[in-house]
Amino acid sequence: MNIIPATALVAALAAAGNAAADGFAGGYVGGDLGLNHSSTSGALMSSPANSPAYGLSGGYGWKVGSSVMLGVEGHVDANKDATHAPAGQYGSNAYGLGLKIGVPLDSLMPYARLGYDHTQGTGALSGYSAGSPNSGLGLMYKFAPSWSLEGEWSSTTPSSGGLKLKSNSLSFGLNFHFDSPASTSAPKSRK
Image 1 (cartoon, rainbow, N blue to C red):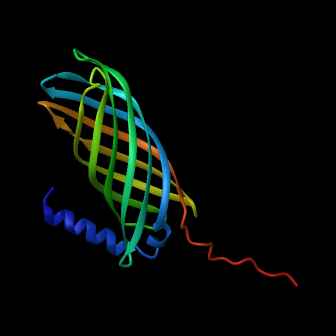
Image 2 (image 1 turned 180 degrees about the vertical axis):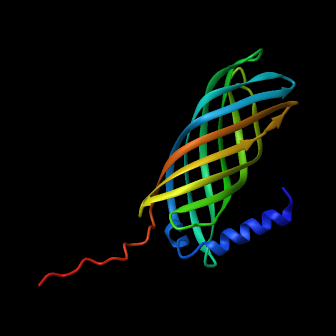
Image 3 (image 1 turned 45 degrees about the vertical axis):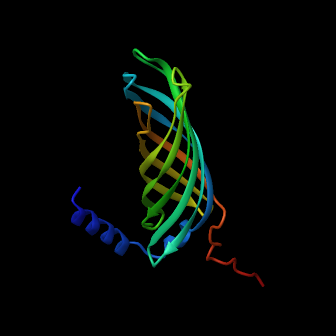
């Protein structure tokens, strides 16, 4: 993607945002379920395979300016073992930390995440351990003051000892927000 159209898109989204950024500010924790698509290349070639994935995450977001959220997020993820010919059955476990930038648009917040993961193999890759950058694109939907739904696509490609693991995940999750703003409508008193 050319840097000028990407910059214009971010500027347009930021201009469209409003005080909704307050609704996404603060701490949160969440869990997700999804599908992982992975393969290896280099010292051990294997075919791509899909497997169930699940994870936990938590983070904190800050309102920057009038319509941008900047946050930090940590996560742990696991991908179940799947059959990857000819390598056999393997999966992976990962933990990491990343920066998240989003542009809240009322109850929706599209975001991008960039960070670093450490991945450990399971099954046929049980001796594999490597770190690498990770990235993700997602959308968060705040359906109640303390709750949001989230969908994210993420990717990482750790490499160690001549073996490269390509791992892409699509996940859907539920988050609880600790620092949600109080309701603005105060109950009317009866006389």
